Amino acid sequence: MVSQPSQSTELAIRGPSSVVSSRSRRHGRGRSHAGGSSYLPQNEFPVFTHTGDVEILVKAGSQTNRYLLHRLILTQCSGFFETSTSQEWSRATTEGGTELSRIGEDSGSESARREQPKKRWRYELDPGTGSDDIPMLVQKENTTASVFGALDARPPPVRNKPPASNPSFFRSVANLSLHPTHSAPLPPPISQEDQDLLNDYDNLFRIFYNYSPALDPIDIANAYIQCKSLLTLADLYDALAVVGPRIDHHLLQFQSRLWKQIAKYPSSYLRLGYLAQSKTIFQEALIHVVGQWPVGERHIRHQLPDTVMDIIEDKVEDLSDMIGKIEGRLFRLTLTTSRGERVTPQNSYLDWLAVSLFRQWVAEKTSPPAPPSLPRSPPSRSGGGHHSRTSNSSNTHNNPPPPPYSPLPSAPNIGRVYRTLGASTGGYLNHDECKRFLKLSPEIYSRESLKKFERRLEELKTMAKEVVRPLMRSSLLGEGHNTAYLVCSKVDDPRDFPWLDGSA
Image 1: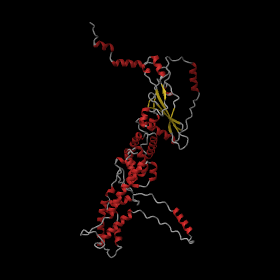
Image 2: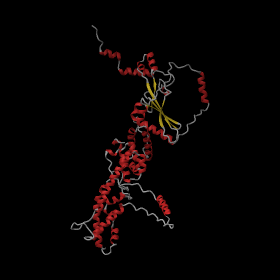
Image 3: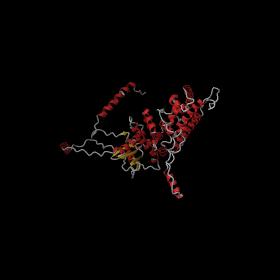
Image 4: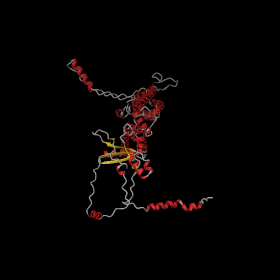
């Protein structure tokens, strides 16, 4: 009968695990490495020495930024890298196949036997040949590869014992201390344009690895320029879906300052909101663009696709229909007599004058300004028909082209006109104006008639205030009550955002 060792004896022989680990750590620290400290290659952004398989060199001016990243992450974030590293377009080099397997067979290492050939890609920034060319990453064949990866990833040779001391080495060190050292010449400074290009690429790859981009957090004008440049680069590499939310998050931190900038430059922020796929920025800019239309139409048609133009034109048409209906209701406003009849010159001349003055004021404020009168050309004395046709053709060429068509009323400050109607009743047609108007008919002017005239005009103003209430609504997140145009357009339907509609 074989007796089993007791558990207490086994624990006494093995000892606590903490003791074993401490002994091993203490023994490990006692090892000596010839040649100085151990070599620890970098394996984090932007250079993943152990796991990176895509090398990217971004050179601008005299400075070169090197990245060693992962194909898996690049293809998930960018359609450009997904296509260029595919089997059809890939120019990858294979590393680490037979040599590592042979080493594994000789050494008996299981990890070396399991090592498989690894593909590596290399990209370099091609600045192009002309000044108008856009710098673009181009795939190159990696001619500097080795079984250890990149050149800077090769570990230093390991020596079993330190070399014998050399007396000449100590003499050379002593001579170095006697002679003055000359520092290497510094590279020439790069231009601001090259520095911005390096920053854009660095921010692009930082976003791919879920790092915050280095954008200006204080000056919104500078932040807009940086965001616009970064979005343009992301659009070039088909990475807007990844970069856009970062841009949206950064700009929204400016809050009220952002709304003021959008009000100043709505067409520019409309494009930025479209590229960043930001519903908030796109909506705010679109309301301003629709209210000011056709201001900025040429810039928008050149910068944005037709799907955005269709949305703008639909919103402009909706706003025009709303204005037309409200104008019709304003011109149909009238007063009634005590018997419920509409006032006319026959049954209540004074009340009819109040209605006429109100309609005249509305027509004058909502109508476009009259075109300037062209100077008349003196009549021709020759009377020749050929001369007359020539002069007519020359006048046709001198006349300016007609302004672009817009369904919105072209009266200046149309927004302020309707806000005047929707505000307090004393903002227009005040006491002095009523007095001057009524004095044009001396036979009916008196203090009592003036008071009655003003009282009846106040009734019209109260009715007009209710009529224009739909135009007084502001759909902006920022301040919109002091604008010279209307900001009541609604942008809340998914079809108002091209990237959600699926037609862009």
